[in-house]
Image: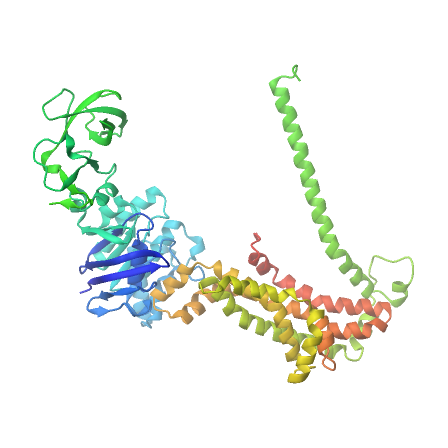
Length: 337
Length: 286
């Protein structure tokens, strides 16, 4: 049973509050992604869990063990770094074996674990090489194998795929998912890439300047963004936020913004009751659908429509948000449930 | 110009560019040749004259070819006190090397890895130690050394030489450690190392070539140093101090021999570690 409990972690560097009382309950064997733009504190939180950075206040528990005062080596975690951090003066074998050697594991177990994890990451033919003789993708595999070989309670990954080129990233992402699912290790994964987060995570913690705005399964994050921030960070293009003046029907008390995803409109080329007449500014054909930038009384928003609808920029199109997809937000940007 | 076609103008410009390129190349090569001969020619003359007999050295016209006469060299080596001075030089240089690396490595590591109050001041102070010329310091130092009882000792001399070499070893090792990604250390910590183990198992092997080079640099600084050596040692003279004092009255061919013996170890040492020096100074080495 390896849960991770983060309780009221605060951290500031000088005047900058990097983490403003962050709490997180990660379940056993869960894959949690910390998602946010650079500077939101996601890497700092990961490094505090690893013990590479110390918190100003708050508690970290791994399982039932309070680890917040322990150095990294006593936390039984493993970490994969963005720049791989494969030791250049050791062979791939020695790299993967490093953690086990430090734990004084018997030679037989070292050999077993190294061979098993190397096979898992498809680098068993590279064991005698040095990191200088490996490609970026292969180094990444070594780093993951090295982390898995120590059989850690918790696996921490800091933007592990961001140094790979796009195609390789896709491939590694799929592979990581299956490897980590099989290893059943509780994992915390940091990224700024929402697609990566959506595809890998059991639960995503969306971070916004030192706070966690929402911690939930990917579907919920997408369809019920807890804050305006989450809605505009997740989704490409992001959620539209529209003032409710144009709205017919009931508006919940306190609502100042209507949040609606670009694909959640009923679309018509002819004027209809309660439909908004919008002016199309640009149209982009994206293959599976087309994306419009449109305007209504100075309010800019984006709409995804099926390919069948023929429309030119400058034309008028009639839209109505789908009733069950409307989300309402307060002045402060919080969702009204 | 107007009657030139576009192609002709283009051709002219290409020719012009080629000419410029050639000129720069020529300038570059001749500068390199000049700088190299600036260093090598005196060394060559030194070698030729040390390997020639006294008559040839003092006669006219001068020969630019050595006759491989070992007389001056062997005379010099048998000269009373030379071997002892050579030994002293070696000991002082080795002391200096060990102390400079022993103190410089931790300081360099601290500069590279930690943010502490007064870091920039510290960096400046290190450089400032080189602001006071040896002649200015030598006499007060001699007085202090006599009071403390360090006078005429090789250890005392190496302390002075360490002071000269330390700024280099601190700054060189700090840039060395800066070049080793901190994530490598962090990875080692997470995988079960404490700070010391991570340093020894990961940082040290990667820094070793550079550390060797910086050690040799300290060695050479001590080996070459004359002034402090001449002032601070009397019976335990190093080779440089010995040469300054006894060669001024020697015949010229023996001076040449002494000069050659003096520079030879430094040249050999630098030659052996030149690869590391290059990598230390960031010069591509392929």
